[in-house]
Length: 379
Image 1 (tube, one colour):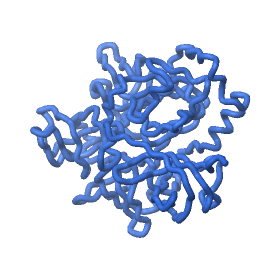
Image 2 (cartoon, helix red, strand yellow):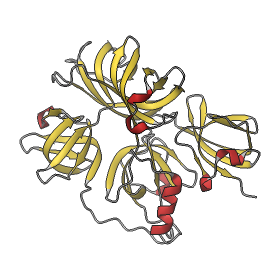
Image 3 (cartoon, one colour):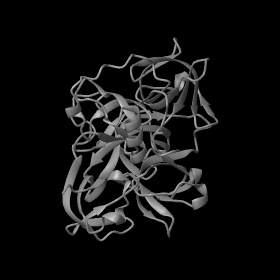
Image 4 (cartoon, helix red, strand yellow):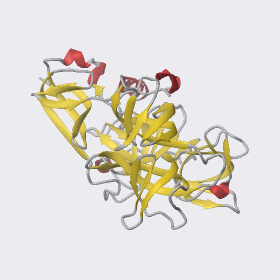
């Protein structure tokens, strides 16, 4: 998948908006209500007799339901709060692709504390009574801040006995603790993954901070990967609506990160619904309609009440940048990490800032301070 860089987005804004990014003195007008060609989000409702589902407030006639490229399902298998991607490219109707965070076997259930274990991860959710240990399930979730790092807010857990699904293992999450010598990394807070270079899709280079989808097998306490795919949000000339949680936002609210896997730019023409620009904060649930990485519309979905964790914290540091390594640097001897979502202003290289006064914005993930934007401090 093609990653949208900050420099590319800025170039698009300067070209498409006359170089100024919009006039904040003129209130943005709501975009014409057109059903987007592609939608990523949770199912709000399923109507089997009518053969329709509702996603992000839009109703779709379902032509097909699939998981991966070769496992077919029907609309009867769909349930509320399952994560899906919907495409209207077919004249026959909507193509629905199941987009779970995890697929695998439940290995432990603690009903008293509403927790269960799948693929080495302990998740919090009150399971249906018909789900037992050793059942095969599909978990849909969104990122959630915890005191130990970026975890999962479980939205639904669906039991399947589909012969094509049983035996399939999948887990998505934020990549950390990458060890290129041992060929291991961690997904989320706890899932330990073992990989080889030849199974990485599109010859991508793995980096800490990426959102990664892994398929393979659980071998003891380790996920033995057979396929590793780095996930981000592609640039598109057409409206692409994505539901998710804001996982970082710049101090001036000119850009933000969604679901820990993609950045969007906010301009003077961005329209806000059910909230204002001031409400664009970490942990808030939104629907983003974007073209080429520029947010045309941001709709707030909750009451800004921290449903996705109250452990979202940002930081800002100013001072002399030094001690640059492949994974970190210091500002006035304070260690700050870098990852795949770290950007340097004006497309400079980090090494060019060695010894300079800088301003760093970032997020606190567990006990780690991770840079999101680095720029030279104004004289």
